[in-house]
Length: 318
Length: 171
Ligand code: SF4
Ligand code: SF4
Image (cartoon, rainbow over all chains, first blue to last red; front, side, top):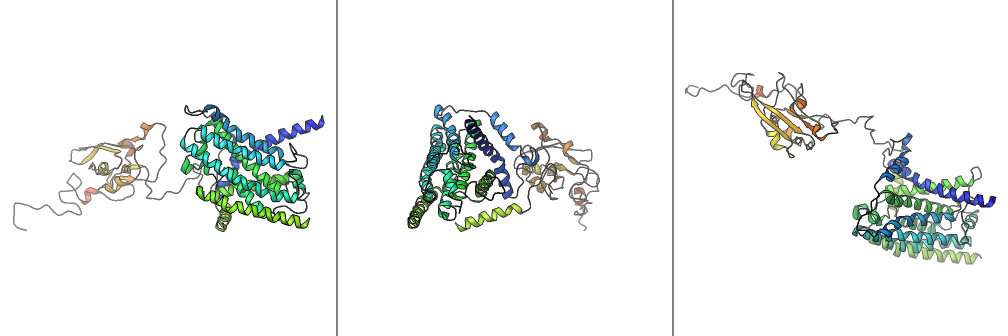
């Protein structure tokens, strides 16, 4: 009984925690962008503007939720939910602290990869259902980008799996007791970081929604809470990728004992979230063909090489 | 690739720089003396209206937002009967100030002109006319040139010569 109760508590905690963090990122992102652009950022609502999140939420809830007459209604309504769902499902396998994990799957990593591939459906379907050429272009770009970056996202993680000898996230963390995987797997880390940005289609890889060319890409036609779903889905994606980097390369909850494990996890995760925002504040968007050739011609061979070398080293030491 | 990392670092360092934002309603920004803002009609040192209703400002205005009607007082001095500027159309280009031969129309450093009602942005002469000389002190058009309108005798302006008696040949 207690076991079940604890499990339910963990599920509710993870759900509420991640969604709250994702919503809070609206404020964090705006504030940090301002900080890095020598501005002040939101400072009107509440002390330091921290209630800006509430204001934004209230605003987005009261916006008219308009479905244009020319769209494919069913798909149009379903599309935004997929990204929320798939990202939230992925959080099930993230170990936040010893024992604090919703589902300790033995194929956790594969589950994460599968769920992040499902996220591509959001973009494709919403771009298609919007029945608008900009949205369609955004959808097509998004699909191509996510599929090609997924290839070496998976490959870059194979090094970690080889070293840890398991797909299970908890075991991967425990395998990093001696040394964080970022040191032996530095190439894997860099590739995963880049692929992670492309997966969440954040700047500088936000080509599916490039404002300057495609208005808002696949979500041009969305309004109200449906748009909010895309928004929160994107922030959830950042949180997810940051926590995956933490778990896979930076030893998850491991850290000196003076802070509880969950705090270590959150510190590491937030530094990566901040890094994502710093990227957005700095880098311009590449051209689309540059993005694709960069992926296929540079990162894919690099990822393959990384797997090869790691495999050889593991075999040699065996 | 390396340059991207370098720009990441440089943007990160911006964190410790001074903010450039001015918290507007609480802090007022510095406006240069020649800032082009709200338009006023000024008076000359004798407290007469400077405007001679020549219509040059209305003609030069790219948005056609000035309209005025000329009239004359008992001395024959021209002045505008009505003078109307529609500030919802004005783009504060300052061309009217450049065109004005009498320094009557001037743009001053003030931009806080918001209104709830569009009609309130149409300023009439009584809203535009101020009691001072604005940016150009001591200048009076009729002291320099122009017809005699009770300010000076005929040909008495600083840049004028005495009237010539056309009926005699003696210089
Ligand atoms: S500032 Fe420009 S637009 Fe405004 S009244 Fe003068 S000439 Fe017209
Ligand atoms: S304000 Fe100046 S330019 Fe305009 S009518 Fe009067 S004198 Fe002429």
